Image 1 (cartoon, rainbow, N blue to C red):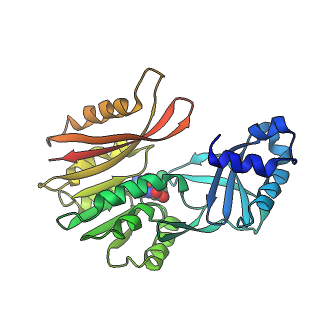
Image 2: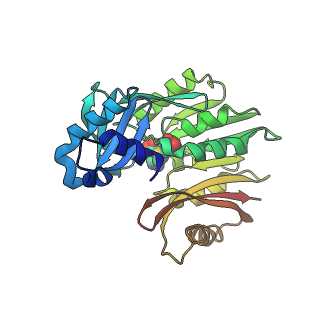
Image 3: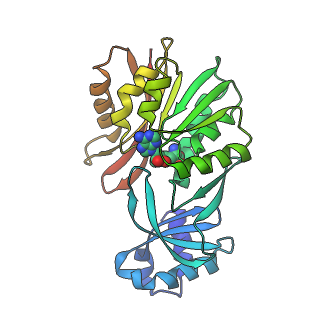
Length: 288
Ligand SMILES: C[S@@+](CC[C@H](N)C(=O)[O-])C[C@H]1O[C@@H](n2cnc3c(N)ncnc32)[C@H](O)[C@@H]1O
């Protein structure tokens, strides 16, 4: 049992029958003082009971919301139902010395990408030369701000389609004091890099696993002549005898083989499992 499931099980002890506790909560995230839970359908009628039990068990939780359905649409947002506590969907989340303000109903945010944000920002630390970086799918700015906080010289252009995400990102840029290093851009990332960044970038972050593949060629064309790195995310289905990382490597190789640059895939990892046999995979691709 993971830590999150243990917390839920402890909170529901004596509230639900023992045999229902394991089943009740399918997902549980803490974003600042807001808990977002997913409830197993057969137990939906107990959702207020479950939410109140969680809030009583975790005194720092001020609001409990229920995620209804999957993350969806171009903005990758979710439908939320208020269950108990303060009636709001805005939260302030702390991560490695940064604070991210986010409206969970209007923008994408996941505390589960902490490891990836830490990994990528540490790869950017102390780069020998100044880097121009584009985050193509930046949301409220978490990757961009974590990167900007590292020692070293760089500028991060941080693009998103969602005007609410950019509104919160501008606040986060100010509150985390990275105004000189991060520029938020409201726009469609393919248009932005094709119009302004052809062969001008040393690093690109592509945290939109549902669609990054469609943008890969434009990203490759934006890397400068001296070379650079693309941090690429994708989803795949993999049977027990298949390696999800290899599947994505093959998919990316097929795509990049049709462009003129020499490339190599330096690193790959499974970020998380998103369903039975479904995986989110990260690759670091170098273009020479
Ligand atoms: C999965 S979220 C990533 C958010 C962020 N990187 C983070 O770690 O919190 C994907 C973001 O890409 C944005 N997006 C989707 N399609 C886009 C496009 N074509 N151009 C720019 N942004 C896009 C969405 O609005 C959303 O904020």
